[in-house]
Image 1 (cartoon, rainbow, N blue to C red):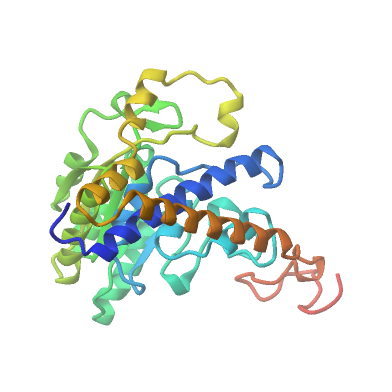
Image 2: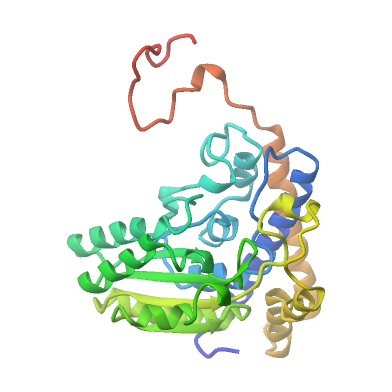
Length: 336
C-alpha cells in the first residue's frame, strides 16, 4: 500500500473504480436492449487510470476526455443519474439529451467535454492551462487520450506548445494496446512516453492496472505543474476488456486472442485493489461487499432517475446552442 494514500482515499478509489465498472456494464445491457440509441465505447478494464489521475485533482482542475470517456466523467465527480439520462437522450442529461456518450461535459466539475475526434482534447487542455498560467491560478489541466492518438499531429503540436510555454498540463496516454484493431507496435517503434520526452518534458510509463501507481505518477505531475515547472506525459499501460465499441462483439472480430484477454483479466484493477485493501487492513471482505452493494444501489437509482426523466421537447430544439439565432428560424421561445 502506498505511503501517500490515506485510508479514506484508498477506499474511495475502490468505490469509484467499481462504480465505473458497474455503470459501463449496465450500459452494455442497455445498448443491447436498444434502450440507449446507437453504440458506446465502454471503459471496462481501464478504471485505474481515470480514478488514479482524478484522485490527484481538485474540483477546480479541469480535464478533457475522449470517445471512451465515461470513466473520466465519473472519476471527476460526475452524477450517475445525469450520465444515464444523457445516454438515454433525456432532457435531464448533462447535455440535455443532445450530446450522447461522446460529448458529455460539466464545466462546473471541471469536465470540459468528452470528444469523438481522436486527440482533439489535447489543445483544449493547453488552452485551459494557458488561461490558468496567465491568471496566476494554480490549477492544472489534464488531457486523456488513447494510444490511437499518439500519431495525431494535433497531440504533438499540443505537447510542443505546452513544453515551450511551460503550461500546467498533464498528458495522460491510456495505452490499451489497440487503436480500434491496430496494435500500437505496428504504428510506432518507440513507446509513447519516450516520444514525449523529446519535447523536453518528463515522460513516464506506469502500470495502468494499478491505481496506486497511476495516482503516485499523477501526484508528481500535478505538483510539478502547480509549481510552474510545466507539463508531464504519463503513459498508462492498460487494457479494455470489451471491443472498441458496443457493436464490435456482434461482428465476430478476432484481432485479440482469448489468452491475451485472460492475461489482462487476471490483473483486473478492481480485484487487485480489493485484495490490497484487505491485505493492508483497510477493509474486510464484508466491507468490500457493502461497498459493492452501495454502488449497485447508486447505479439502480441513477438508471431509475434517467428512465423517469422526460424526453427533450421539440419546442426546445434550438436551446443550449452557442449561437443565439439562425437565419430563417423562429425566434427563441416561438412555436416550431
